Image (cartoon, rainbow, N blue to C red; front, side):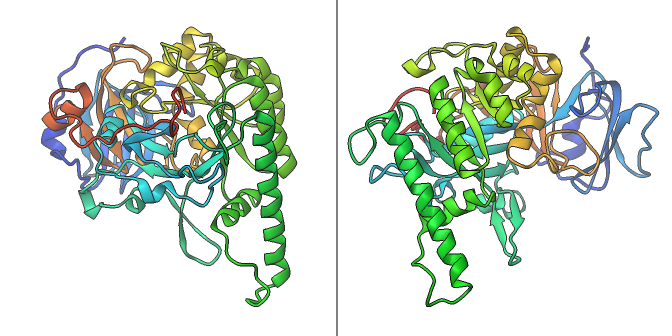
Length: 444
């Protein structure tokens, strides 16, 4: 279907190693997978000022005067991949002092110079939800990162990679969710809970305290003498109660999944279920609750007993039930460079091609409330896209280039980028060690 080609104009010649955009770019002749809309056998993608300005079939898209044109015949272009659950960089948040620490920020532990971020773009990932581990009922705040190239345009801190939004007071807020977990991970010696029942009790108690804290702030009506003492943990939970921060909840077993749904309904907070190894058992209940699922899919299951029910059919069963589902890497559990494999296994388990490709892109973007910016090749969205040498669900396909906001951040022809893509001496010299779930094994 996708034949080898020789480019009329070399990507490297046109754009150099950094891929800095100069004016409009038009990629022509590629097989384009826009995600929202039908696949285009021979299409045109136009990028202007870091944004997609047009996409469509050859002959149906006007190329701006003076645009640099790249013949991408034989290649595949699709949106950059969205990973809803990553531990890339080995960052950790909460410590062993207590089971619920929502005020801790992974932002303060992210090392964007870690070589793992180079692996991510080598795998075509352009948006990440970087999470703390799952050894707690709440291990802290996650952060949504856009994979701009570190060092370019003065980027040297996670804030410069972070998605942001303007608060009511006009200040920019770094976007992210709240990591929570149940099941076996948090069942440890005091002050951690020893049972599933006590775990739910502690979470319920803390949310009630957050409700009371919120009510006191409202009652104070701006009077500083009546305000309660600041509590960073409760402030974060109030954001959850007010819908300003979504809960990303680690959960595997069907009974644990139902506990999360129960708490979400009781306290009316937005939640994304993560892993859901036994989600296939309660797919109808998940769909009825309108709760999305970020699914773990690995080709060699193991690690913990509560994940023994993991099935490659889970994605298809959830989609058939009507639940929004996406896949994630849980990197290192699945290497970021192998993210396509999750969707391919999902197809083997009965998932449609359309749903499989959406599960790597637009569905994950929706779970992060970023689908207005990324996840599909649609005019007005960020020019985050990848160029492949074959079908995305083929094990033989390679990511040739990754682009973020119209700038090239990975090129397989670049020797240093290739080193991070295929491995070898020096590829992980800046890699942080991976701590999955505090002191527990298995998927986090």
